[in-house]
Image (tube, rainbow, N blue to C red):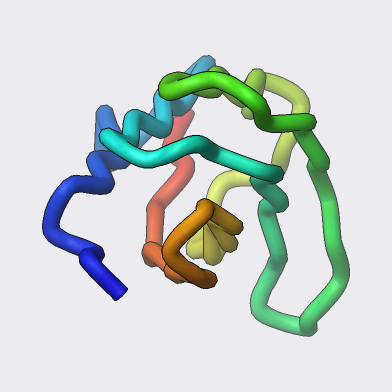
Length: 79
């Protein structure tokens, strides 16, 4: 798919992460290194915000389902 138009920021993140896409976002989930889904957000728009203030610091993966397919971004949560 056309992954070049997906932005995930800020990285590292403290309180929130924004996911922006020029394609329709169908859903966003945040997965820890063990593979557990720790956050889910519905899509339907071109920007989704995730509140990561309740997560432990560390590395996570953000799985973005858009109209062009599935894209995964690695993100660090810091305090």
